[in-house]
Length: 356
Image (tube, rainbow, N blue to C red):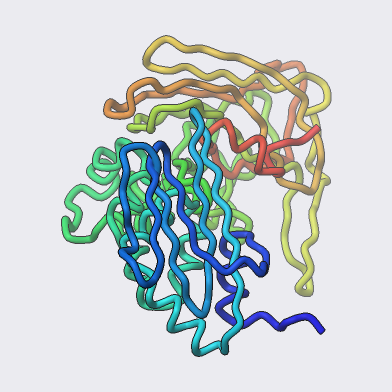
C-alpha cells in the first residue's frame, strides 16, 4: 500500500511541482560554492568554489539549484516517515533566510502558495529582496505616475500587490495593472478615453452599459459613413516590447431571461473594405496594418501593431487610430470597448489575443 501524503507534503509538492521520494536529505547547491554538514556538526562549511549543505529532519527536503550561464534549475524532493504534526514542526525548523533565498528564484504564485505553510515560510515571503526582482525596474516611477503620494512603509511585497490590482487614473478612462503571474505591465483605455468621430450624435453612436467591459460601458455604432477612432497615451512603460489591440465586438450583446443574446441586425459594411490600424510613438516608430472585421457575436482583439520602449524611466507617448473612411458605403453594428497595451510575449500565453 502506498504511503498517504500529509497536508504539508501536498502543499509543497503543489507549489514546487515536486514528487514524493525516499531520499531523506536536504541539499542546496549554488554557483561555484561548496560546503557540507550534518545535524551533529556545523550546518554550514564554506569553501571558495562550491556551497553544499544537508539538514536531516523527520520531514526531509532536497532542494537543488544549479547555475550554468543564463539558466537556473531548481528541483525539490522530499519524503516523510513521521506524522503530520511532526512534519509541520520540521518545516518550522528551516532557516527563514534560506527559505527566502529559494523563494527569490520562484514565480509570485508559487511564493504565495508556500507562504501558507507556516510562520517561517510566511516570514520568508515578506522579505524585500524576494519581491525586488519581481517588480518592474522603474516601479518607483510607476508609483509616482499612478498614485502620486504613496506610503513608504508598505514594503516590496505590498508594492507588488498594490500594482497587481487594477488601478484607475486619468478621470476613470484608463486602467493599469501588473499581470499577477508574469509581473508585466498592462494598460487599458476605455472608449470614453478615445476620440471618436460623431460620438456626440445619437444618430450614429451611443454609450451602452454592459457587464462585458472593464469600464461597464461600451461605444455602440449604429451606422456611419466616416468611421474614425483616434487615441493617445503618455506613460512610463517599463523597457520592453509591447503590442496594442482594439477590443471589438460585431453585434449588440444583451441578456434575455438570464441568457446572453446578440442582435446582429445592424452589422454591415465591414466585409466590403478593410479597417486600417496605425500606431506612432514619440521616438519615431510607426506601424500600419489592415484587416476585415469578422466574427459577429464575440469579442475579438485586433492587433494594431508593436512598439519598443528603451528607457522605462522616461514617459513614452503613443498615438493610434482605427479608420474605415471609404464613403461609398455605410458601416455599423459595432461595439468598441477599449484599447489595450500588453507585453508582446503575452501572445504566446494568452489565447484570447490570437484569432484567425
